[in-house]
Image 1 (spheres, helix red, strand yellow):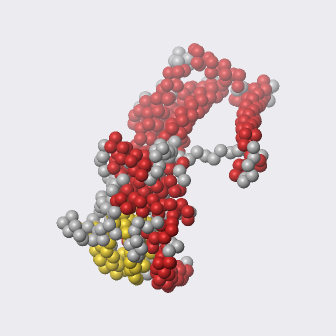
Image 2 (cartoon, each protein chain N blue to C red):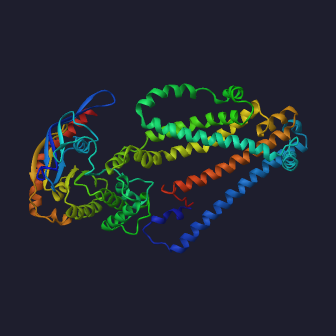
Image 3 (cartoon, each protein chain N blue to C red):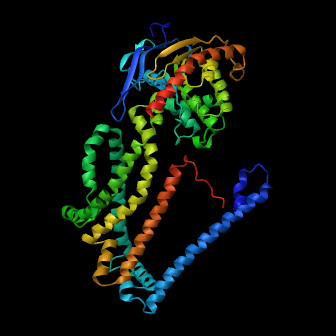
Length: 270
Length: 288
């Protein structure tokens, strides 16, 4: 890391096309430019199916750009970077491992001694308030608890870049707010760069420093909004502040157009 | 019975009564099932015995439960033609077990290897389909010719019976592994080998176990068919000899032995599976 001040993640003129099983080429991204500073929390919002998740896959190295460059800490992405953590939309806990083995998975994969990994996992479970549930299996936990295990599993690797793909979309509204608080508390300590993909505009504003509004697919950045709400934020309260409502209104006016266009495109395709 | 289902009802029922009632209902249900099971068994065996005694069916061909029991007792205490029944049984079990374990291990290894390697899977799938279309028992004479009358030919037959079942399930299980789990493990830092060991194989495990349940039966089929075609010992040989001497009771007795062994192994397999799959949600308890 020679340039300690450079951005954590850069996508420069990126395009991503893929071919569907029935042979049709589909463009997911075009002329996509984004730069995320170190320690910055960025949210991507856009209409459903516009290619938001694709950006994350490009950063992990699980997918390659068809054109353009993706850089992580100034170096072009080439395989999975160990400094990256990923929070999935679906349940990605290993159902055959109990809670503590799930949390310890990362360190164990990376070659930490078993005893140390268990010790560390216990510490992280305490941090997400799940002490005492170590030997339960995922199916025995509630949706919110599973998400907390998943967060501990991700954060235990101390990622410098955290990619989140609609991680809380499957939760009910109340649990989701609790998870926002949990995430803010963890992020406050770890201060990684975060790219948070969501279709929930309020979630994006409440959490992020900057909100990127994407166009309907193939996605490109339409506008970027800086959210200058002070930190630390109380996520459960912030949505009632006048300033929040004002920002939310501005961005929604911008986003609505794309959502309508995206919905129309999907109906045509169906 | 609808009472027992209303556990979620907002009106709080006196809990103890309610639970006791559900317990009683469950116990009664179990008893009733057990009663009917024994009753039907007694009815069938009794009917068979009676029909034989009264001459409604020809004893020479159909035998009778009591004659079969006597033959079993004779075999167990005196042996068959000077060789202990247990030795015959052991020979068949040895063939089946070796065939089963080698077939299952090879099936899992090849299934996982091909499931993980797209190119190899596409290349070999056509050959596997061709070989799989051969009814396995026709290989028996060939194996006898190749490997002789001893253990090896029966093991080979049991092996091919087991291998394809386990292989195709392991292969399918690997292919069905959840993409999100794989991506998660990779990002958490799993190497390809760690990924196979701690994600791919566990998620294929329920598929593999489903195949192991049926394939032990196949292993026994392989061993016995091999013994029919040519052997010096084994339960298959007993059946063959009994057939040759028109000893109906002997044939049925051999079937009973095989049945008991297969049931026992099935039980053991279920126990092992439950132990390995303790992470899976328990099936919903039926209340009524």
